[in-house]
Amino acid sequence: MNSLPLKATLSAAYISEFHKYWKENHENVLSPKVNPNGECLAIAKVLEGVYKNNTVKVQLDTLDLTKEEIANVRFFTAIQDFNIDVHARSNPFEFYKRHPDCFKPEKVKDNDLLVDELLNFLGAESQRDKRKPWMLNSSRLLVEKYNSSAYEINEVCNGDIVEIVKALTAEERYGFSTKKAHMLLRDMADLGVWKYERNIEKLDVMSDKNTMRVALRTGALQFRIPLLASFLDVFCYQYSMVDRLSRDAWRVVWKEWDKISNNHRPQTPASMDYLIFRLGKIACRPSKRFCPPEREVTEKKLESLIPQDRLIFRADSYCIFSEVCQLERKMLNAPNSISIEGRTGWKSGKTNEGGGGGISS
Amino acid sequence: MAERISVTIDSKYHRDQSDDWLAGGKVEYKDKGYYWSAQNSGYGFGWEVEPVTEEDWSDIPKDRSKEIITLIEKSIYEHRTEYVF
Image (cartoon, rainbow over all chains, first blue to last red; front, side):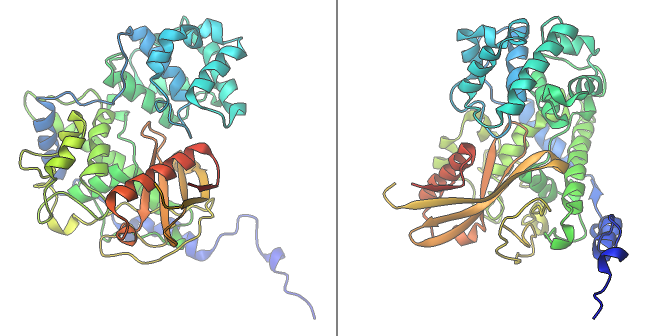
């Protein structure tokens, strides 16, 4: 009996018709809308209420270091900021005070031992084959193009966010992905080290489950149906679209914010992300939220939060976005991700009408 | 924590499309299995571990559940696949 010549009929680029359909039509099926009814301005008004009397920024203790010192410390630690918690063991800015040479590009560029010293301090034991060359190459970059000072990158690039990101990510060997570069730029803005002049709106609130969930529940980003994970989305079209549109939605919030007179809008969209991330993590959990008709946050819980996190709640102990989020959206969730790379054992295909479930690990 | 807790990391990987990291696995606590998933957005906020689903974890006291989540975070950072505490 002849076997079917299946392999011969399939090209290397063959993909299931199901997945072709989903690739071409996922946007039509999900029908996304950013700011359909002025939700972004409503969100901006709430944020203005918080920012007009408070400074909200990423929580890094830079001690009494100069802007130049802060820039070099964050430049090198940002590169290493994956798969480890660079702030867990102790404060890198404090480490700088004891070991300044580990952050001096002209000394680091040819000195493996200084690199090891910093990596040991950070607890970066894994992937040293990447981590070390990144440190050495990025040191050389600073020496050759920026007078050995990360602080000067902004000046050389004329305060242009796109140019800075391009400079850092031009070559993979410096260790900066676009996202890492954005993180560095956000921190430099939040810490008052860099001030940008051009393409400021391009520094995004990066997407994660929290920022996406808050975008969905506030209505800044809306879809026709709740977002369920499916094996049909094995190439992450849904997730990638929600990622992109969530960043767009928060950018619109930032732009709308400027319509408020005498506003206290932060320097970049990314500077909103700390508050939004923490709000998602603390006040707007997947299946628990502190807004009517549910209960307000308890005094005990409030007391356990750092002062900046308490800004997530109004005086009546409900979430600041309580009036923005409509009841029917309060249970929405960010999509789970299915990746062809993942081999996590799927446990359940169930969810509730809020979505966010589906096949999950 | 007196009870035996075992954390298994089934999967941990970098997702190129979003430049983030995902992980997922199981916890055994008091002879019962609980699932979790985690995301590190790569934006300076570290790993965030979530119960799958929160309802499935509702029989674990809140304080203990927080401790278990912290153990899972620690396990992910330590780059091992199985832990017994």
